[in-house]
Length: 276
Length: 297
Image (cartoon, rainbow over all chains, first blue to last red; front, side, top):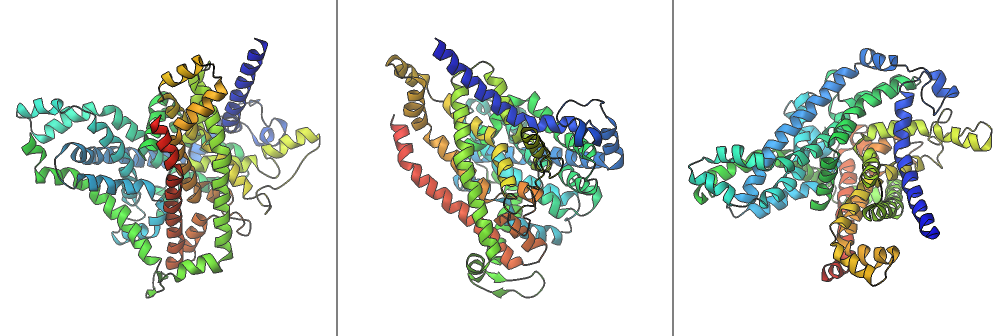
């Protein structure tokens, strides 16, 4: 009995140590975002702030244009999630429920997109967008983001479509329902959980994306949060409280969405792994 | 209904938007990149066919590129030898059912959803030479102020990117393992438990062999993720000091966008693709036997 107790203790000790290692940097970030440099650099490195300096946030929001970047990121993410969700739901419907010969091939074709590293297409993508006159504007990032979200979303949604019994749409078609009404009014509501899963995947991919945003955008007004904060961190490199506040602002939406939908988020990333 | 679902017009209408964007902005550029890699090309002048010249130059002539490839392999090894075993161990404990299972699962996963820019900036501050957490912790043990510039010392710079990379995705792999373990029918454990097997035997003789397909997926993810790694290294060290912490993706990036070496940079980009494809195939092959065994049970 004693041995078992000790073994259990060891198990929890290990679990808790790992949990602390995973959370501690985040805890540290949040606390130093609320401190003055005096505390961060000497007096109070890891404790809770002695005086809570919300000014850091005020300053980040007003001085550094963080809000602009924030709304840009929201805009890129929301549009990507909606457009990618819609067009991949349509494509997945065609692939898994319509009757045509090449559907297996097209599905395989989309799945290539999951395997290739994004950077391999970076330069030609840059040139194409430049030729089209889209590079540097909103469309210049939106299009690659939507393109990037397509493969995984098609995988997740077609898997889900395949599991829906034929009877669901049969009844609708017999009632004289057209293909669009059937798709939007019957199928879309049914695939909602899979759509949520795919959306989270697209959202995280877009919100956190760094390489394209850093390469394709040169005007400040189109910048996303990750790039904005990176240049901000270079500019105010000695003011850790201010940088910390900016980083918390960039992280908060993903953390909130994650805590609200943690089961769905976890499921979506597992789905990504298993389908990929 | 079949008339509707077999209609060419509707099929094209439904597939086209996604397919068009995907072909124009993913597959097309990828193929173009492959073509560039065979040319001497700086983006403005004419393109001279170079065959495999760019690739040969990269793997025989370019000291920085070889160093970068070596670094990416170190990263891959660290992921496979540290990240995956820790993740698997955590998943085995959690899936067995412990108090607070859900909380642990949620906490381990938090770093995965945070942007690598934030993770990178945060770890830069941890490794900071004067005020970094690491030096302060060491100082607490040695009882005297400790200063070491982890990020700019050639011996430790790359390590400073490996640690956060391994750290960030432990929870991700843990979750995939966890989901895999949960999908194994409990009949297997029950039978083994009745026969008197303990946790360790159940883990090693039953769960891990049955998990072979999931372990394969995680290994491919860890490996290809390491070979293509960019964000964290770009943020934390930028490949420096003096290129010691460079990986193929960061070198490729500066060749393409700073030096304008379009042909050569594309060859380096394509090198990563080829590496990923070959190594994924090898892992697939290595696991074939294990997967057959898993499905035979």
